[in-house]
Image (cartoon, rainbow, N blue to C red; front, side):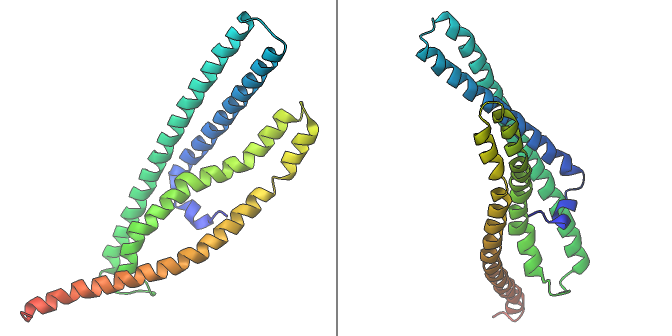
Length: 212
């Protein structure tokens, strides 16, 4: 589920993942607060409470919604920053590698492959770093937070939620394996297309030399 080598490539940028996870947890807590306030307001309606007793609920609810919006905005900004930093550093590393290799083919990695990796491959890693990893860690934390909140209200629901936690990594593994197979087929065709393109463009030089 987590590739150690890819995770090491983050370097100092790991802190942004933990910041995003922290923001997502805060967002979850505000969501819980919003849900609790809505349930409380429904309860007040059933009990036929006066309008004055609803005022504080509306005030706190508005504050929670505003805070939730701000946290979501900051979370997306941090993800965008993480993605841009990772793409910049990876492209610099690949560019340096291309300069070292030149036009040679070493260990089965040709110029077309390096070109595709520097473009499409890094875009895929952007999604992996900025979206998948934060969501993965958050998915591991959220059930325990929900368990701690709900166990005091209705323990059977809390136990049912915590028992479903193993389904999260199982579903992630299943989806990732299927996606890996599909992407492997797609990637091989993509590299082949790049090889054909580079061969065609390289041949233009010889055609021009011979005025053909």
